[in-house]
Image 1 (tube, one colour):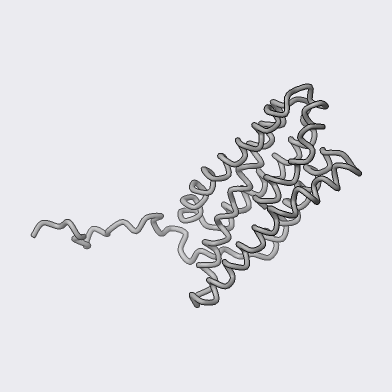
Image 2 (tube, rainbow, N blue to C red):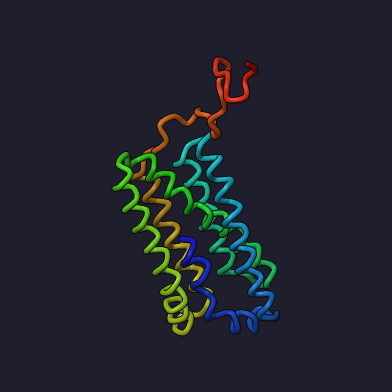
Length: 191
């Protein structure tokens, strides 16, 4: 979701600025804030998914993605657009969970590496294709429809994960960091 989310509306920024009675820089701020939040949330989701499970963390993030996309679509001002993009960024940060889930599901390192490489190629392709597709949608249907389609895409992902994806983390009670147990003397134990 992240590459498409970040780049699909870039061609529409000048029109968005006019329609929202603001500057292109203010609309651009929604892109930068989304990047920052996606990165920070990826870290938080990693910790949460280790503690509470991958599936609930991913479902919550995708629900935020859908809500944020719809908020951006109906935003009456640049402030609402930025707020919607902040909430959408929470969901876009869920991309990091794909790699954790592949580690949970694919035991063979070579097979997992191939899968992760495929994900990286798809991400790279999305970065190139998203502005083109977003621009075409915006020309024919308006910039708000770009966000509506992103919300629909998020909703499809949310329903598919809810219906088809079981929890992939073997033990959700396991500590996020491999902290030594009470019996483990650790590296720095007194000699």
